[in-house]
Image (tube, rainbow, N blue to C red; front, side, top):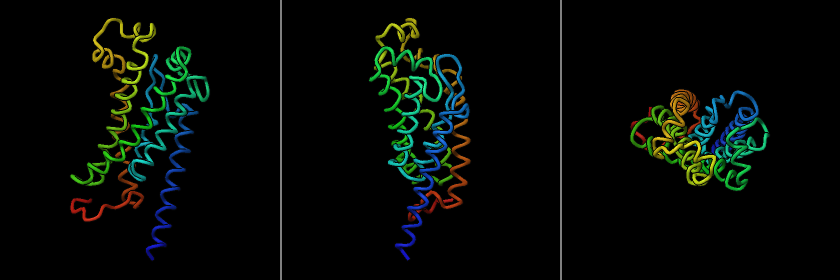
Amino acid sequence: MTTQFTKQNKTKQLTMLGLMIGILILMAYTPLGYLNIGPLAITFNMIPVAICAMTLGPIGGAIAGAVFGMTSFLQCIGVGGVSAMGAILFDINPFLAFVQRFVPRCLDGFLLGYIFQAVRKWTNTPLACFVTGFFAAFLNTVFFMTALVGLFGNTEYVQGLIGGKNIILFICTFVGINAVFEMLSSTIITGAVGTALHKARFIPAMEKNKKEA
C-alpha cells in the first residue's frame, strides 16, 4: 500500500512539473507571459514557478525557475520574442547577460520552496500559497535588478538609465508600477491556484500540522 501511494505521489509530481514547464514555455512564446512596457516587461512567468515550488519543493521550484530563466535569456537573441534590454545587455557581454537572466529566476524558484514550507509551519496552507505568490514576484524583481546593477552597473547603458540617481531610488522608480502589478497578480493567482491544488491534494500534506486548513 505504501509503495503504491509513493508511486501515485511521484506520478502526480511529475505530471505537475511537466504541466508547469509546458505552461512556462507557452507563456514565453506567446503574449500570455509578458506585457512589454518600455525597457522592462511585466511578467507572469513566476506564477508557474511558484506553483512548482509549492507542489514539488525547492528542487521543483529551481527546475521551473531554470526554464523561466532560459526562455528569458533566449529573448535576448530574439527567440520567442525580443527583449529590448536583453538584446543590449547581450551585445555588451553575452555571458553576463545569461547570468543576469538565468540565475535570479533559478534562485527565486529554489527559495520559494523553502518560503512556502516555512510559512506553512506558522499558518495554514492557503495563506502560505498567497504569501509564496507575493514573494515569487518580489524576489524576482529584487534579484533581477540586483544582478542588473551588480553585473552591468558600470556600463554606459545602465549608467544612462540610472541618470545619477541613488541606486535604491533608481531601482524603485525603474521597476515602478510594473513590479506592483506583478506582485498583486502573482499573489492573487498563485494563492487561488495553490488553494485549489491543496484541496485536490496535489500539495503534500504536512505531518502533525494542527493549523492545516
